Image (cartoon, rainbow over all chains, first blue to last red; front, top):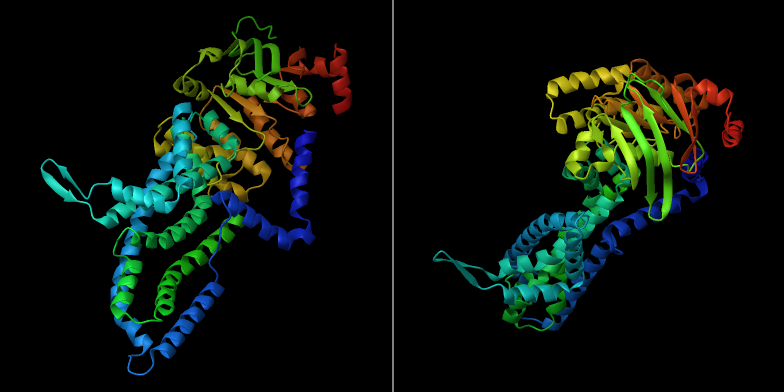
Length: 297
Length: 251
């Protein structure tokens, strides 16, 4: 009894040390977040947007100054190419959605397999997770590009597999591994006493996992999952290297069509601004969710 | 040991040995509990009291000896399905309540009968509300565990165990984590259960409570039962030196 009582009051004591509170809360949040993600995370801030905007304006100014008279204004040029770039951006989003969906689905199974009672299942899942989590994303992407055929024939019907679909699978692999790690971490962060309580109420292992453990994990998994999505979205430009018509590829095409020096900085800053505009709200939302769940659980 | 020869004990442990790795926690424990009986297990921390309860509902395996609960030979249960059948008859209440934090008090009570026993939802709900009323928490049905006091959480946990309509209830130091003021409300609930004829095995540090409620008290130390007897005898006239030393410290 005394042991538990001391532990109990110990918990209460750390909660009321007022001097440490402001710094401690912040540090705890950071530590918890990084533990949940399995690695130290970066965060988009509003200031990043300001810097991007400045780079963009600087690029425009330089391009304008180099161009001299006779050329159309730099902003008009960018505006002219915007519909094409936007069509490319749609590909980026489509790839990110699908890769995230497939990766999350597969990652859930891979993550649960890592806590399987069967040693071979656990071992295989652990190896798969580590392999794909530590392999460079670009290598995995190339791998899928050249490994998956450009078409398959099933019962005499030929189904073409476009490049962007292959890119989806290529990016889904590291997503799967990262989601698996998030799921495993979240499941293991639930106290074992919950498993014990469920067992003593005669729940079986599968029921315990899906009805009692995973529902408690969702809150903890959401912020790192959203963070992973932001990273994935930014990684979709890797698909340009393997020839998918996404925004980066379109930008290169626009630049070569313009064949005008000095446009590089303005155009690439412009692309970055698009990604920032998409990812920044996600980052803000993630921060808010984290703060909310840090207070109550 | 129970001297009641006409009733076969509902729980019977014979020479139970249990170890975690190389550490032997239980070194030959034997006792029986007859139906409707209340047995209290007392003793210093680390005497293996909690492990003993966990053996009875098959949460931890034993290495030697036998445990029988009603018709279940607990030591021989191998598969999950067999253990689940046992746990429908034996409910356990934990020191740290272990309620499911994402479910309301009522849902906590209803979950196992609904999903494990597959009973009719309407009937389960009625029973759950009745049980919460019984433990004095009728108005907390839709409250989440995080918003309840320790004593209230523990009473929900008791209701949750009772909802399975078990034959035997195991209480593992259920008041050890509670504030002194709320200990009483939980003990009253248990006392009421005992009066109604529920078979109870309690690990407890509440000596006064043990004396009031128990038919038989076992004093354990070092993984063995040092002394057993009716509470009046064990508390007032302990035979063993070790028992006297322990009682003089806690009473």
